[in-house]
Image 1 (cartoon, one colour):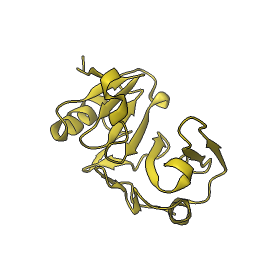
Image 2: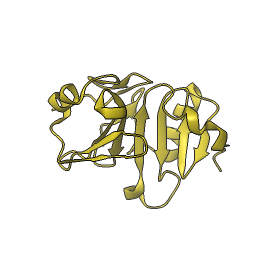
Image 3: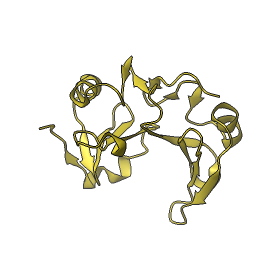
Image 4: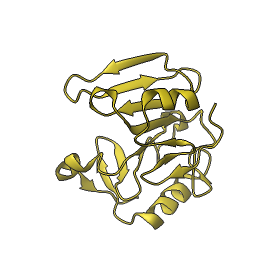
Length: 152
């Protein structure tokens, strides 16, 4: 099972790298409990109950393009900053240091330059927090819909 939850911007998390096959990912984070096919994009999303990690694969499950994490993965970190246990402003400021131009769309703060999204941050309920880490270009088609994000 994966022990290193350090985000490597646009590359992956720990030993899990974008471009891996579903079999390679499963060998590192365990087999999925279920999976869904998005009929519009032909992407496959896998769910794991034990660790709560979601994996999204490109059309027809060829390669990993995104990983999703909930608050139960307290080890998830960006450059040593624990994303779920540090103060929200400290998390935002650290990500902002590497991507000074974040966007907002559908409740997600999107850092395109480092491949990270945050949701549920800057709210009172920590259980609503989630982080996704994605490969370069994953959110680019939605950029015309995005708005600049400025933390209050």
